[in-house]
Amino acid sequence: MPTVNIFHQAELSVDVLHKNLMSLRDFLAKELTCGDIALKPEEVSVRIISVQGAGMIAPVEIEVTAHAFEDRIKRQDEICLRIREFIKQKLNVPHDVRVWLLLPQLGHSWEE
Image: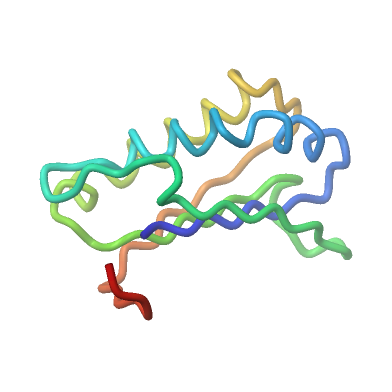
């Protein structure tokens, strides 16, 4: 299942992200759903991580890791732009936001 790490240096964005975590998980599940798999919001793990130091490109950076299904590969830039737009517009995050979509082959450690 997808994992999402939201790295931030901007304190204003933390409260907004926490308050809107369920709508964010719902949005991410819809964006990452493809012909091979339909995701539910509870299948998307979101982590909000505070970063110290000045090495980030933007005040909010998001890394999404999900299995490399063909539909996702074809839409990878669109998915990143839509996640960025959602964070900035729908959640009113006033800072620059950068999004990376990592699409490796994935395994997992649990049984269904």
